[in-house]
Length: 625
Image (cartoon, rainbow, N blue to C red):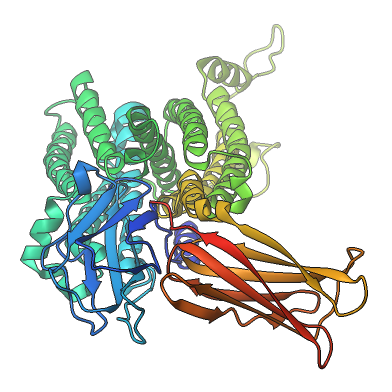
């Protein structure tokens, strides 16, 4: 039942959290700007991102109106800036609308993609079409996400079981459940790492699953930050396999009396060093490697991962040992349980401390807890962690009772209380020894020579059952925390989302509001129309218009039309195609192709036969780079 519950929890959370991961970097600007119309063809296209990015040969493509590629060479960083990507264009480009399709890898290893358009001369009626799906909403992306869950689980089992043997109960290394747990952890981590390495190339380039065996793509993936971390992890796993084999032989030799299986200080040091090195392969290629305070964030991430493995993997190890059955099985000593209890408490303390820092670093503000996906997921994780701490408090109570029951002082008191008390008669000869069971007047029923009375359950057995139940619940909740943590590593941090939104909201600061008076057609009735253009820059704009009467009240008019003209370049009039929204007029897709001084013509029909046209000028600016 415990195994079924654990598997069900993992599968439910894997399927429930299998949505596409958000990108961890964002496009903050481009040259040419999205939607811009250029008089002459540009020499290159430059993209700027909110953090450093890496790319392959096909990361940036510029497609002509005829869907032909016009950048003959791959992208490079512009002026040595790691957060930029630039491609050079062909010499002579025809007029029309060009599409820029890009897909890069952010510093924490997650691919991001997008597209935008610009025009040379005049916009054309057709443009190249590119896919706009999420980078993770593919077969490779979904499989990659599942394998990341498997890798985290393997790390927890491997680190937790090894720590339990090295620190809490060395003899446990000779038991079959612990050996199987170490093997399962190592196999899960090794297989998932190999699969992640093979899928790294298709994951970054949006390739198919079958392209995982493309040696050229695999070679490029190994040279990236994430690919290098996976290769280092495989080397460490090979070393760990050799050490696990040696330790297994040592335990087997101990059974023959050859030598003691007790681990020495050197074994513990080697184990700790390998565990830290494994955790570094995650911290080097994920959230800790990007953002603020990287020098501090990476060791904190390593401590967080190790504490998770020691606590969760150790819990599962203890649970399997407590649930062993069979007359030959040796129960877990109370001293070993006490040592694990102390170690688990320290691990959870480290988890909470490092988690608080990571939360501050990735969230950035209280508002982001409710306004971003990362913040909402983090709130769920905190709630589960609080529940884990509450359950763990009961586990510690059962452990304290079990340790007290097994203490030497308790054993002495029990032995003293169980001594037989024989009544003696002063001056009389001693009572004869009993010869058979029939002469025992106080023999309880059913205690004949052919029957055995079941001994009453001891307090230690009761405490062990209570501890086993609490550890089971704690382990299930620990799996939930592990899955949520894995989901968080694939979700855009709130601070990064805020930086991306801030970069996007720069355009909103240029909102243009025009107030234009007009004659309403009756004596001394001068109305006004208020026109709002947002963001008031090159590209797509929202246009809203409100008509006011002379006394400032809202006026209802049968028709309202707004057009914009760029007289210097002969562009327009562009009709905003306003629609009546029952109180105001609005349009949400007016595209302005050029910066400069634009003339806004407003036609207001006040009655069925009367209308008036007024005009005003507005300056449209280019998108900031």
